[in-house]
Image (cartoon, rainbow over all chains, first blue to last red; front, side, top):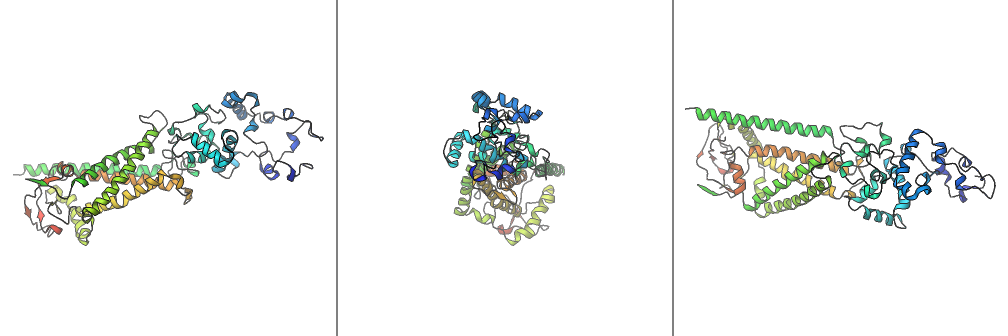
Length: 251
Length: 234
């Protein structure tokens, strides 16, 4: 950083310091060929993500990426860093809230997958592509692209499907057994799923989903009242019938 | 002898049965969305939403027609509550449903097609006022808000902006469902179980057959000035 002062580098040092890799020296990744100027190192000589991230979870992610449409379409050119910035990456669990996680995740996708020069143009293009959704803008703002563009049971969210295979059944999310609880909110899995009677309470952090966010106490209360009313009117009706019959029999 | 049942003109009956049909559709589709589940449903979530939204928009139009009809044709006057409706009106009506109806006592506020001032008994007035002028507007306003969720504030009382509207909408719908159970049952309390339903369908009802004064209920005829004897209610 003696040469790459904050003013003349493309990397924002403050954001880098906050990121998951913020504690590393630059040369931890930028290894061979970067100690002298001009640098002779190339990207091919740099450390690969998998050199460090060898744990089992990452192995599952690597398998999912290989099977994804990204790997099939872009083959070897597609790398982790195409989506995950090595300089600014922060895991969702460290973000301020779910909205921030969605924004960051979707920005990765929009870099390649939306036409238009400005953000507004890209939003318009995306809204057009997702016009089959009710309130497409809301869905695009409050959900991660990969929630629907990966298979429902695929929790790493790296097995990106071709668009023809994207999830289109509304009930996949709009139901008590909502897919979002295991995808978008997987990092909050330890938080209670039911709070103050709401099923999928963690989803209410971000939006209210018809079908996924109902309150059990209010439901039981309403059905209990309906049951009592039905019993009441049945008993009342029976009483009327019995009394009327006894009156008819009376001389 | 039968006659046209004036207080139930054609426009009101058309609105009533359209409202029944639409509300039942909204109730079924509403339950379907509220309790939706993953898996192959008989009708997809998307189709259910389309039916629910369409029925909701139609219900709003019919509700506007109901309001217009009430003002234009004078039906609104039947909803006006008088001091007598609260006490002794409500007491009489509740006492009748809890006791008198079993003994075959005359209805304290019988249907009187001649009356220009009273069509509903005090309990009907209270419940119809609550349902038609509090619950239905709440249901309609929150329903329309949910048709345009991106116009709602992002946050209300710490909840995402959509949540309070959706919760009020859902549980107002439940409340009207509870009303419907009682409303339908009390529809069977005419001279025969089907009589009041036929009134509401055809607008034609029987001429009052006799009048009487009953000492235990006192002067209870309200605006009629007399009490009409009812047949056996069951």
